[in-house]
Amino acid sequence: MAKNRVHLDVHADDMDAEIERLSGLGATVLTKYGDGHVLLADPEGNEFCLMP
Image (cartoon, rainbow, N blue to C red; front, side, top):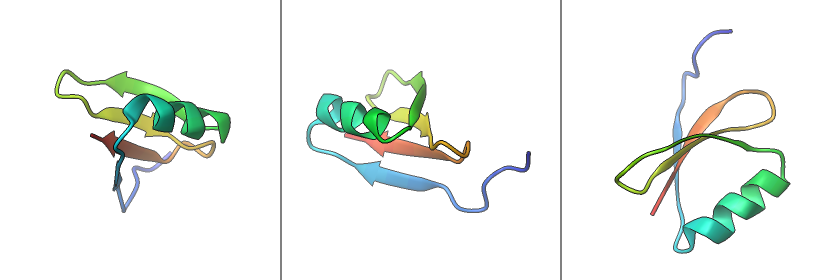
C-alpha cells in the first residue's frame, strides 16, 4: 500500500468524545502521542491526525 498523498489534521475540543465518535464510524487508533495528538486510520487505511 502506498502512503497517503494528503494527510489531514483534524482539530477537536473534546478529544475523548471525538475519538469515540470516529471509532464508531470505523476509524482505528494507531498511536497516541505525548503532546496530545492521536494518529488514526480510516477503514481504508488512510492515516490522519486528531489534534487538541
